[in-house]
Length: 161
Image (cartoon, rainbow, N blue to C red; front, top):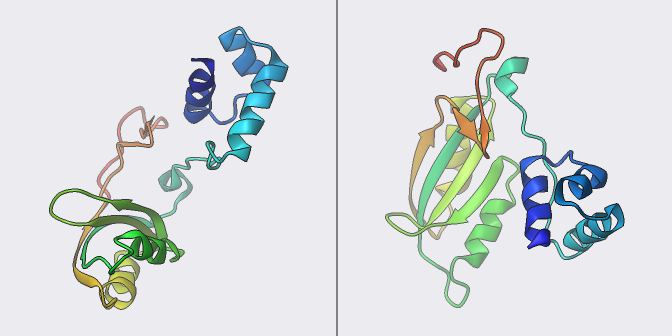
């Protein structure tokens, strides 16, 4: 299906122009542009984001995955809880999970302490949260389909510490 092919190309490289996509798929530029506009209007394309290797620009920030067990709110399930978690600027993503915990949240901060304070001051005290477990990312090898390597030295990154 050509619509899926357009979406896959954009997912892999959001900088591709309608002309490049049309050429790649043997389509008319006008048809590709119209399809992209429709995808945006229907929120099929939820947004465009650039993936930055912050370590290469000297940012020593941290990322954490927080596992959260909750008591679902009557009549609302996990929706209201997920919406509440999503409101925090530190939160990058919120997922409803199967398994040992209910919600997974990824958080970014400037330091381990900042993330720990976020969890202990904003997440853990919520009345429906029964427990949390925080896992800090020590090293990224691949993120959102993009391999992270140190191309300047021709080798993988060193340890995070």
